[in-house]
Image: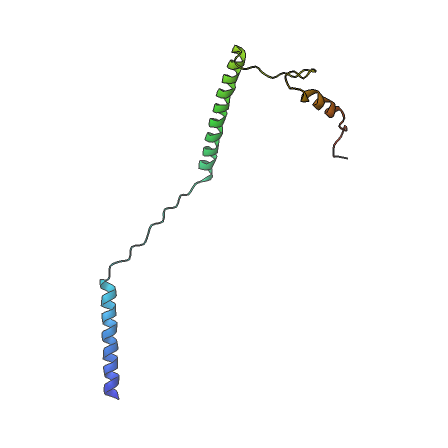
Length: 108
């Protein structure tokens, strides 16, 4: 029985040594690098401001172009009149409908 115990211990120690050698000689495992983007609040605020300024510049250019077209006569601005010539036949109907509305809608 002692002989078997010594053999088992010897085999287990050999297995343990072999396992350690295999682990030591194994190639190191490369971990994947995860790229994360971190935005601080000032960067986000600056980005929003840049977008707002760009939109306002585009609107200013469009407004200026429209004003120049109106002044040259390419485009006519719509005007309201009591006859409804610029707004069509629904203009007079709309004005009478507005007069029929109550003075206060909602509220107390």
